[in-house]
Image (cartoon, rainbow, N blue to C red; front, side, top):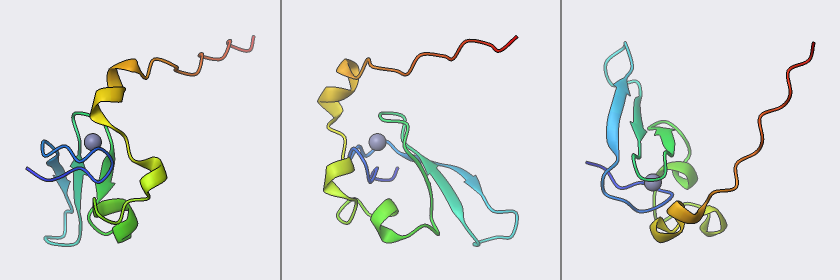
Length: 75
Ligand SMILES: [Zn+2]
């Protein structure tokens, strides 16, 4: 398990590895659905360096019900 940079959950897991061994690894958080690659900048991968304004509190996730509407299909 890995700590999620966005919500600090410790439930994030590795979901993919590069075809070339050791080039990159993709992780995903099942709590806030943040997904990141190991080769991204530390401000996107390190919980301590993640932009504080973009952090998500786990207790707020169930209340995050505002989802953009699906656009009408153009005929
Ligand atoms: Zn998360």
